[in-house]
Image (cartoon, rainbow, N blue to C red; front, side):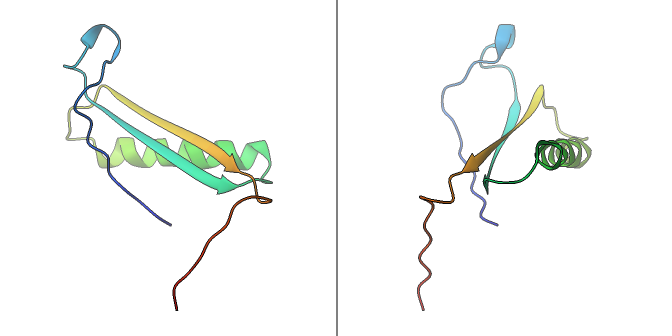
Length: 79
């Protein structure tokens, strides 16, 4: 699992503009899992975030899951 945070200087959320607060999670997994498993991953992530951020003012939580092509995905680990 790899994580990173990206802070944005400019964003717009519907009619709230830059006053809106959001969390967006992008998940990348190797291709091949059935749709129901991919949907379960995004459902669990959005529920976990909503429960974790219950005391934080957030207008939107979004989760995006994309599949990486196993034919072209590469990883190098240093020794």
